[in-house]
Image 1 (cartoon, helix red, strand yellow):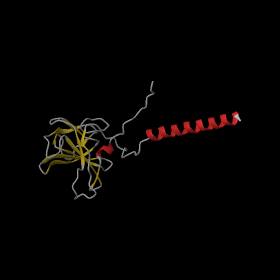
Image 2 (spheres, one colour):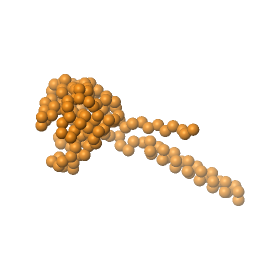
Image 3 (cartoon, one colour):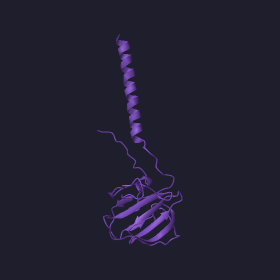
Image 4 (cartoon, one colour):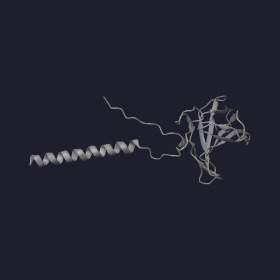
Length: 174
C-alpha cells in the first residue's frame, strides 16, 4: 500500500514540476514577434527598447477619426533625434506648421518624427540610429518627440511594436 501511495506521489510531483516548467516557458516566450526582420531603435535614445513613453498611441479604427497615431517620447527641445531604422528620407518639411521628417525603411514601414528640425534632406540614406535632426519645441498637446509608423499607404501601427521586447531574466530568491 505504501509503495503505491509513494508511486502516486512521485507521479503527481513530476506532473506539477512539468506544469511549472511549462508555465515558466510560456511566460518567458514573447506573445508576438512583431516586425523584427529589420532592426529598429528608439529614436529618442538610440536604445533597442521602449523607454520614456509620455503618451501611448490611440490609433483610431478609421483614419478620419480622432486619435493619436504615434507615441510621444520624452526628449527635450534641442535633443538629437535618430533614425529608428535604416532607410531613405522620404519627406522633410512641415505638416500643419510642424517640422517633420519621414523615413521609408526596406521592409516598407514609414516612420515619421515631429517636431524635428532636419539635418537630412529628401533622398538621403540613413542608418539605424543615425542623427536626422534635433527636437523642436512642443506643439499642441504633444510634448517630446512624436514618433509614428505606417504600413501600406494609410495603416497606422504602434511604433513601439518595432522595438525589441525586453529580455526578462528570473533570478533565484535567496
